[in-house]
Image (cartoon, rainbow, N blue to C red; front, side, top):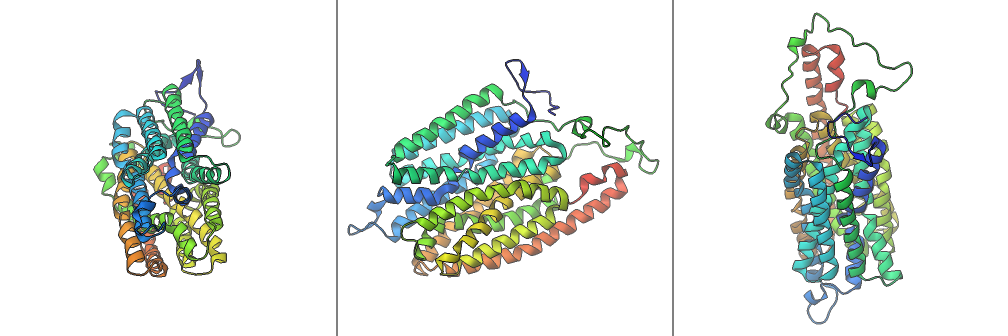
Length: 458
């Protein structure tokens, strides 16, 4: 199905699309989403006494220690999102192979440092490398979805699912640390070795230029829908009326549909990042003294990635607007349940948050790829996530406000997140109106055979 000029070959054999997708899925699963396994990593760090020196009077638990943990996650999660802008520019300039190798090596370095050192400064720097390196790995392999034609949204969203599934790595590390006594140094060193292996394999099999979509005749399934002769262009829609000039980066960045989807993503990403960084502490305040419910959260969060193929199929069938409306509703419910002090009902929040979060990221990636193609994908997706990451830095002052002003009462901030998420329905409606208007404009400017390219099924 690969139609590009840089077709990967190994031992003289062309690699099939499914093997390339499998490699991409494994890469993302193993490293890209590790930074969001933070609740489990926080438990491991607390068990080892990391940052206990920030507490006065010989205490091991204090606000300053929690703010230190919050700072590590804030910087790591910011790098994972904001790092996509420079990584995206490198991807567009130097291609996926160089970007994938460099990102994997950056992740390996970050993991090695995070395992070996324990000062706040070194942990922050290492987690930033882990976050940025993981983001670069994901961004470098996402274009493999172009090989799957009409199923590109399913392929793209599956990679977003792999990203979230990757958070289970730190859960496994935390369990190995408690049950088998495995040290942070040995666990993170092993993770660094995995990232280094990814870079080596990328050198051997990953292309230097982005994948091209399958040719129309290759995208058609066999049978009664087999390739047919192309229909002649109707007189009412001469080919001269269809512009062949490729859109510029600026025209795509400044388009109404991109800006509206970016606003929707950014607003929801803020509270989603805050929850990822603080859910362990919120559960402890609800009575999770032994960390059991935190592990349940980590397990549900990672396995929620299984919802992404269904999300992609739903977008292909029902369109972006209907699906993101459901996603937004899940996030409203998650924040509302987190306001409830009863620990037993929190798995409802875990499930809604896990599915809502992974589909939020998948909706942005698939929307950008489907609406604008991959010529400027690195900057469009990377720039969007960088903008959202800068806004998400507000999670740290929100945590500080909660701990120091509201005496660690998270009800108030979760109420703010509920209100913010509800306001996102207005943006969803505007996306719908904008896409419908563009579809109507395209109906008059293009032949019927090209109408499907401007529908709201992003």
